[in-house]
Structure formats: structure tokens, C-alpha cells
Length: 123
Image 1: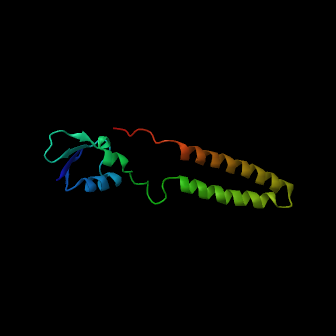
Image 2: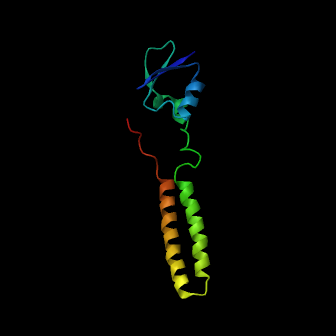
Image 3: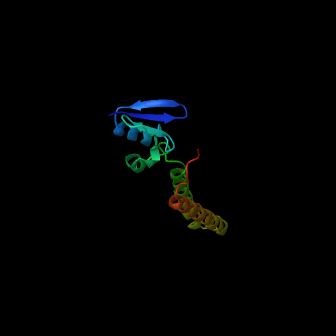
């Protein structure tokens, strides 16, 4: 039993629902694309098919967006701030405290972004 997927760029044919699910996970099939099962006459949105709705789209590349970079930057800045705070100079200690406040602001942003739900996809 095959499946046809209608996208804005044209139609694609997949031999099984597992193949459509793999294409959906890889981002080749969007949630708003229409899917038709062979032998049926009704086109359905990909997001309305339960097997596809459970499939997760692929992450944004190897780093997963900017979150990993933000966490790595906060670790480096935190180490630097700790080294400055433990120094003998009061000016360096003050700079370390300011840098530590910057790290806390960055980690607050990372935490808020991690818990934010993704918005609806644009048509």
C-alpha cells in the first residue's frame, strides 16, 4: 500500500507509512502537506495522521541551535568570573562579580528558552 504526499513543490510517492514518517522526521514532509493513501480519495494533512503527529522533526543541525553555544559560553564565562573573584585585586574581584551577574542572566535566558514551547509553523 503506497502513499502520495502533495507539497507546494509537487507530489511525492512513498511505498509505506514508515517511509512517510521518516521523511516527516527529516523535514521533507511538512505538517501542512497533504497525504493520500492508495485506495482512498480523501487527502489528509500530515499533522492529522497519528503516526506522523507522534514523529518528531529533526533537530536544527548538530548543535541543536544556539542553546549549546549559550551553555558553553556560560561555562567559560563562569570559570573566568570565578578566577577573577579569587584574585588578590579588588578591581578584578569587582569585574568577576559583574561577569558572574552576566552569566546568571545568560543562564536565565537559556532556561526560559528551554522551557518555551515551539510556536505554530508558518504556512
